[in-house]
Length: 72
Image (tube, rainbow, N blue to C red; front, side, top):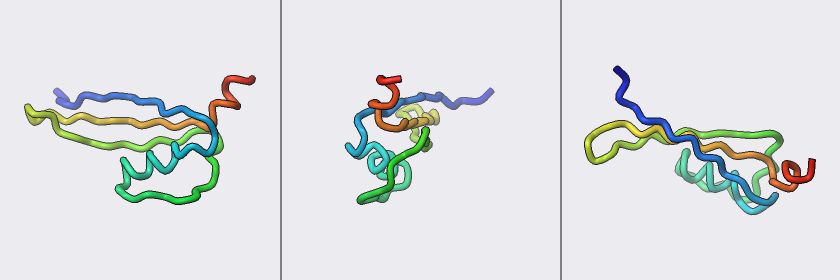
């Protein structure tokens, strides 16, 4: 049996506030200054271990600025 717990986290916000940079910093351990705008969605995965040694998989989803979603 797989001992991994999966959390899916959606990162939303206005265009240009740093969602892509935050995702890059958390998942790749580097920070992107002035990245191009996201078209559609993007995601990254980070794997952690909890205090019992169980794997925690964070799926971080980022969508294009919420202006486009809320004003359809």
